[in-house]
Image 1 (spheres, rainbow, N blue to C red):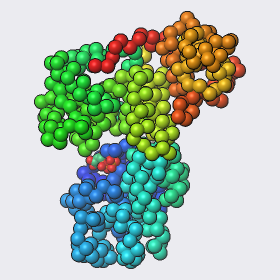
Image 2 (image 1 turned 180 degrees about the vertical axis):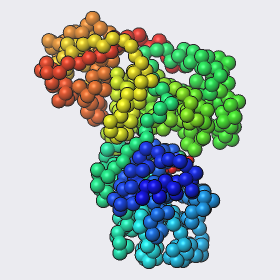
Image 3 (image 1 turned 135 degrees about the vertical axis):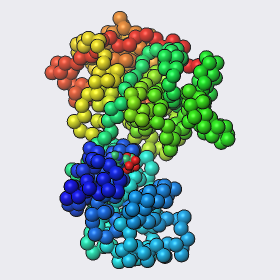
Image 4 (image 1 turned 90 degrees about the vertical axis):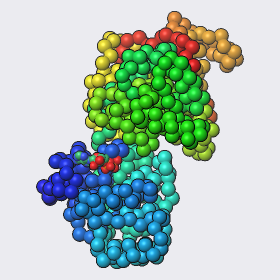
Length: 517
Ligand code: ADP
């Protein structure tokens, strides 16, 4: 069976071998096991249903929300000699009727449709007469309210499944893989959760690092100078920061372009063009830049400010090194940037989505404070099991000695407990360092036995230690209107002396020198 699949891969697509994961998915599908395929963008999801469509009797239906891409996808398949067509709102009623007739005659291996079609009963009635062995649900996260792009019409997919005499196999595909979204997809499409295949999130040519506690502007200028022959992207969280960095870098003699949604379209396009043609060496942008941009020689992506979650981060950072050559992805971390993101989340979203988004933001903060392999942290976040250490990232190559910090960690935990586990990180750090802050005094925290217990350390150091504890899951954050911290089960074990805590080197202590431009 797989030999045949491999032959088709070679004949129609010209590739010699399957990528990791593709073979497993194809085998599942050919054995009629409905499955969920989670691979990053560009990972090669399409082949997972295109190859089976050539081996199964009947017409495979592909549901995709990307109407603007459908025609291209179909044209590419037709060029490769595979009979495929599409039905969406760009066709006239007459064209739809003709296409449907051809579909009913069994003329196509693949039929792409927009999800909205499924809401029409007459359309479903017409499909009834077609032999459909496989339904591929592209961008399957659109079915989940927890996904970043919920589309109510995706909920109609289960109606489609039920209209055929022989129930088709379902293959859901997505690049978004938080556990909630995955569970939702499986539940709504009746896929067994253990039929999920997650692979390919590691990008072996990328080197990840997080820079804490440095003058960001100096870092940027030095980095760009050191990489003067290379092109890169710098992402900032706000338009204002983009404008400021643009001025800063241009003044420093760096050929810089800028891009954000507040700029006139003509200007934006011109700037994009300057970057694509290497006329500008650096693109400074908000997250508005990058969708659909295919520039292969981006050697670095620097996040001047923390992005809002791991999904955005990996998508943006992943624009580095598309050509497979070694490239760098750097996050410049400062705790005030977490506040900026909290503010942006608070402004932009419906009330009920805020706690979930804050939790995702915490994932990003954890990434910045973990001492484990950064690539491993990322792929584990995306649900890939058994990820190995990359051996390249800033943490893998960090040679500072590991120290036992169990005692300090116990002091923090004990303080959190004494404060009733109802307060935030900042005030806890103030209590630990013996601050005379008004709030500390008013709450009577100066009387706690843990007051000033870490007064030999700076507020920044203690905050850093607490961030580390959160990233290790020793402390947990409750994302209410004001975030509060509490002790996890793992933390309780530390408190009881049942678990040791090791940390690399000393916390970064340098105060961030005036960093905003
Ligand atoms: P996705 O849908 O996951 O974003 P695509 O299916 O569009 O990704 O595939 C991305 C690119 O990788 C395409 O150019 C595709 O032809 C190529 N590709 C897919 N599978 C293989 C393979 N086994 N060997 C080589 N190239 C592949």
